[in-house]
Structures are given as C-alpha cells and as structure tokens.
Length: 244
Image (cartoon, rainbow, N blue to C red; front, side, top):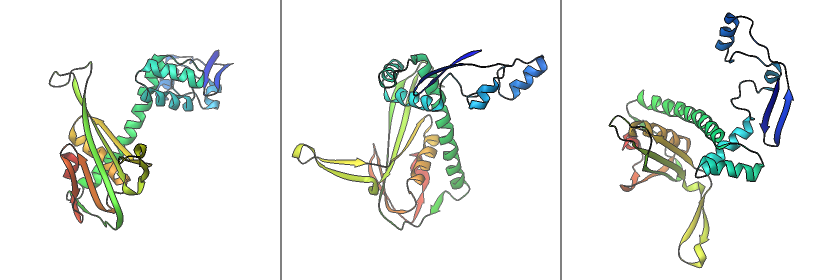
C-alpha cells in the first residue's frame, strides 16, 4: 500500500505491506494497543506508526510554531509554503496545532498540579532562603475574547489570563532608542503561564512558572499587574498572592 509522508526536507513516497486482522477479536485487540484496525510493520520500524497525520514530528512542531505565530491558519499555511516549500493545508495546520497545544498544556498542567500539591500539603506558606541578589518580576494580565461556545452563564466571552516571570539577571540594557531618553531592554530568559478559565487554576500555572524562574531564592520579588507594582515581603510568603 503506498504512503506519502511529509518531512522538513520534502515529501517521501514509499510502498509497504499493511496487515489486516483476520477476526473481529483480533481487530478489538489491535484497538486496545492503539492501532485503528491495521498494522504496517515498516511504519513501526521507522517509528511513524503512531504519529497522527502524515508528517514527521519535526514538521509537526514547525507547523505548530507557524500556527501560533501567524494571525490565522491560512496565513500559517502560506508561511509554511514560503519558508519550507511544502503544501500543508490550513485544516491540517489547525489539527496539528490543536494536537501539539494539547500535549504542551497537559505537560504544563502536570507541573502546575505538582507545584500546588507541594503547597497544599503544607500550611499555605513556605519559608524560602531568599539568598540570591537581584529581583524576580512576576507580571500578569488578562484579555477578553469571544468564542463560538457559551459557558455556564450562557456567555460566549472568555478571559485569557497570561503571566510572565523573569529575573533581573535576564534583563540586558540595549541603549536608548534613537539617541533619546527612552531606554531599551532585552529579556533573554522568561517563563510564561497562560490559562483560559478560573483564576484559581491560573494561579497554579503562574506559581509553577515562578518556581521554575527562581521564586524562593531572590531577595526581592515584584508583582506587576493592573493593580500596580507590589513588592512581596521576603521571609515567609503566602501564595494566595497568585490567586488575586
């Protein structure tokens, strides 16, 4: 049976044998193993038997990158055609972006739940050393957007909550813009937290991002939000701040 497989360097076409289960019981057994009714031994040998779609993993990551970088799936399709000289339809771009996004989100959710578990098993406060010079900045904001699906209150509007965490160690001065007084800076390391849903769940993700960025070690921690700029006192810190 012929197969066409897309890679970063172009399409590959090849023929291979496909095995079909002899009985319904065999078919059900294959289903429990994650195969949709057929087995292609060459696909298994190449490690592409369980990859969704008809493209390599590096190409899937590249497709997901352009999907989040561009304003629409059609624009992502056009950009892939210009940069990689490959034809990947906008519907395929959407499916790949949803798949990769779901995998990334599940990974982030596990890290967030683990960070919250450590906090929940304590008293709600943790005593950290705070022995590192510098400042840790935690910035958060939100933006409303409209969807096609009504929520519990029958509204189609949702809030996308976004947080960014970085330290003064990662901030580099680039000079003044156009020779004026406006200073320009570059941040070379930062962690993001993004969540569409409750503030409580978003707090888990932001807390996890802050821990990964060194929250618990810097002597100064500053939160930047719509409420203004707040410096968190050191010593013992209550993490209810992440659920504001």
